[in-house]
Image (tube, rainbow, N blue to C red; front, side):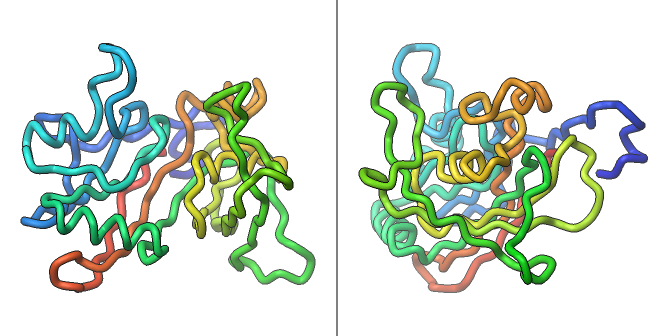
Length: 237
């Protein structure tokens, strides 16, 4: 999306992809796994209370009763999610995530213009190495904590081209998988993700109607065949 398509001073429209009867986009379906595209605002698994039972796993199980959870995205994050269709695949996929054999990339729009280190080449990945810990007094928030935090690494790079939102479009690659990692790390370097109700300031929250974070690329080995799978999800913003 470019500035000409939205008009000067107008907030860009969010894109809505066609969905199944359960409100799910399915990019891959076989006897062992599913690759689903989760919309922003939908939980991955049920939460506490009757108002939090609608979720991606429940909707998937309406269509695929054997669907099993492998990993999660934050409720506010959209994009690609893997589900297994039998216990053996769930175990193998879970091990692949734990051993960092599943490659994920996200696109986000962040406040300001994050700068690469001096001498860095355009498009080069820049690491963020900041330990993350739970903020028990303000759950579910996470904080950077050099003493109690777990080692956490994120790679980021600015994407070329104009951004229709009041910030910078970046690609993010989590090396570790801590809760809220991408959101915490970008906020910690002074460039929170727009629309982030937990880690952005008031201006950053008001800049977008949703969290501008999307899991757009997923690469993994098929749990049964070992064949390498690569999927991409269209950007909704």
